[in-house]
Image (cartoon, rainbow, N blue to C red; front, side, top):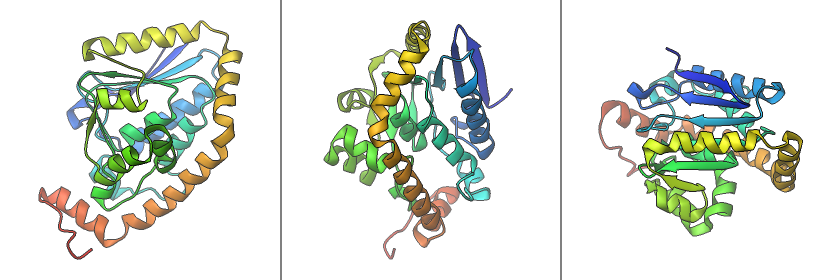
Length: 254
């Protein structure tokens, strides 16, 4: 079975991350599949709304570390950047349903969604610094705007998980429901949107995002350049080496 499932029903395109045995860790091939699906949905008249979801127990553990080390992003057309650019520029309503851990890009992708619904078991984290890396997905811009600077600094600098109710308080999610109800609730909301005039939805979204869309893309590009550089530096090498060796990293000299 595919690691990325795509279903279309009643105007809603549902993209499901389907690699639960590996905690929905995302590989380069999975990013490519999601990017392709998002690009196709832009011009697909059958798609009026897109919904991204995982399972009831896990949204995504973020990058698959082994795959990421073997196939690091190389250039602006790398699958992960195609995916991020795709969701950042997606013109139609984009929803997410999040249950369980949402790590790294599992959290930062939500900043580009229009509506986010979470199970009460959701746990969000952006542990980039802990991996010797930096913010990505325009999170260095969008998280301070959404959370307030100090809460964003805590999330990005400490990298510790925060739960669904905290995400609701800072505006990252719209509603928290039991995980067994989350997918159905998100689908119901997506179906409501799919019945509205698409031209009105698209124009309203465009007007909301237009004032800083160019800045979002500039920040994302700058983050990507820093991320790529830092990936080759000693702190990241120590962090990833420790992860693969199942030990605590030692940053005392870095």
